[in-house]
Length: 278
Ligand SMILES: Nc1ncnc2c1ncn2[C@@H]1O[C@H](COP(=O)(O)OP(=O)(O)OP(=O)(O)O)[C@@H](O)[C@H]1O
Image 1 (cartoon, rainbow, N blue to C red):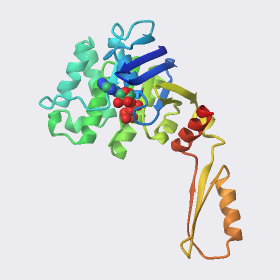
Image 2 (cartoon, rainbow, N blue to C red; image 1 turned 30 degrees about the vertical axis):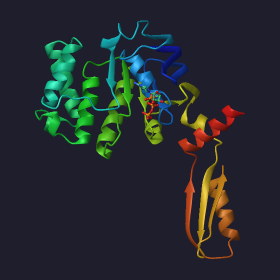
Image 3 (cartoon, rainbow, N blue to C red; image 1 turned 120 degrees about the vertical axis):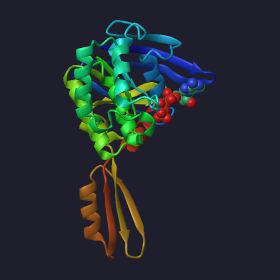
Image 4 (cartoon, rainbow, N blue to C red; image 1 turned 120 degrees about the horizontal axis):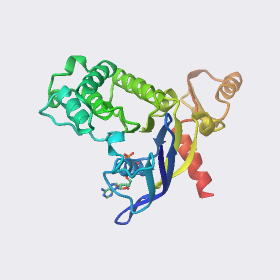
């Protein structure tokens, strides 16, 4: 569905993309993760046709991003709503721009109002909405024309639990109906819930791709034990529970706190940084 090969994009001295390749099939959710400045948004902007790459190739269903614009739904990282028009007017505008007929548009708006909990705020101007309500409205504008490719750039940034869950549910539903999804986030549990494959971006290219288990299995987590005399012991281990049990059985002083941490995204970045340097 989405095929990007060897994309490059420079901003002066910065290589925002440097040999970035990614393929996403229909019905697949790919989670793009990486540190700030890794190149995720630049990739999303290229796919959505907002900027052009300096090199490489990209097609959506065999077409250029400009030609495929009507098939793509985008939630940009920074909210881009018109403050003086209502939620309903936004959805009507985006739906009509994508060529939806009256009846199809009305039924799509009704569905989204329920799925994204917009019913109560449908006729309010977006300028007066809370951050989470604006996020849900923004997502609805990306979904209203039932795009076959969804580009969601940190769609849950700053969102509360209800907004986050509504967003995850509808992304899963659309992927289940066959949409290809690119989902950028700094929050790994969302990708586990979405059953996404994870693509790790570093310095403008994908350096690893796989399921959560494939990427994190075997990476060490951490055990932390704080003793009554305030000594704070931290051990990096692939077997946190067994290590904790052993530490406690050998402890010769009172323990005031214990903490178990499984491998996280940061551990993954660190391990990839080491393996890429060597
Ligand atoms: N319009 C621009 N002009 C100059 N530099 C830019 C521009 N857009 C992006 N960059 C630079 O390109 C690099 C990649 O930025 P990008 O926004 O794609 O990263 P990101 O992975 O999305 O980061 P974040 O997680 O912070 O959103 C960064 O060094 C950024 O400063």
